[in-house]
Image (cartoon, rainbow, N blue to C red; front, side, top):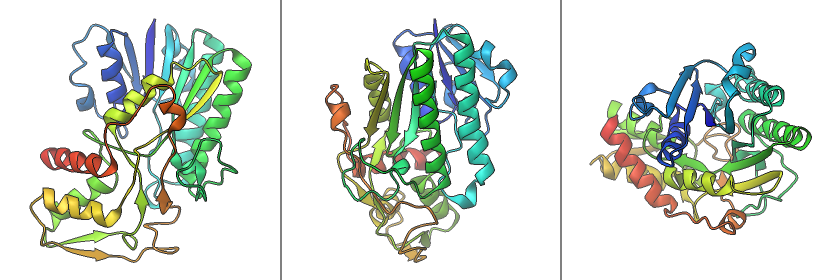
Amino acid sequence: MKALVTGGAGFIGSNIVDSLLAKGKPVRVIDNLTSGSLENLSQCLDNNLFEFIEADLLDKENLIDVVKGCDEIYHLAANPEVNAKKATPEEHFKQNIEATYNLLEAMRVCGDQKFIAFASTSTVYGEAEQLPTREDYGPLVPISLYGASKLACEGLLSAYASMYGFKAAIFRLANVVGPRSNHGVIYDFVHKLRANPDFLEVLGDGSQSKSYLYIDDCVSGFMYGVQSDEKVAIYNIGSEDRTNVLAIAETVKKEMGLSSAEIRLTGGVDGGRGWKGDVKIMQLDMNRLKGAGWFPKYGSAEAVRLTAKSVIATA
């Protein structure tokens, strides 16, 4: 049977596809190509183990046929924008919550699936008082619509898995970076400096400090986590440390050969955040996943540097 990867033409999804194909697992991808790109799957298109369906998870009538014959599901499809200026409440509801509901309904009706792996987010914790933050931290009080929509999806996955006989692995991700990424702070900095190499606008007060997870570590974390025997397993995936926005800005400037570019801080909102709903400090405790044998290879600074080099080379 096949693995189904929703959002498989996106940044994380396409890397999951590569990993599964490398293991010899047949893969079916569904993606509406809103934020994903077939270019991310160019290396897969001639592989006889690979199948691509251009469709939307909101088209629930055809989803049963999409999931049929797939024993594993990796659910990456979502609207990834945390900044409310880039995504409306309706977009988060439809592309995150409604799309997940439709997928779970198709799984319920089909009944072929052993498990679903879901890409959640560290933003479900909101502004955690415990750093690094453990999976059992609570209450979960997200401060962004993105975080709230992902938390709602977690609840749906937990209930469906418990009631309809499949397993769910939920991964709360730090800021995932690496080749093929097409949004986020590193991507934005590179494009801002391409447009004007004399100065770099930095949203907020520059002290926002977060964990950055390199894509290779993200994918390996998924592959360890899905081996769990738990009905519903929840895992944090991040780096062992964090870095701040000013340090990221300096790294991007250095990699672009623009060390003299002036950094201009906007000051931000709500105590120096980049935007409404921006969690200012985030670092995850990964002891649960490390107990399964997984360890990150890259720290935040190295993940940022490698990503900056990749984005610069392709921008």
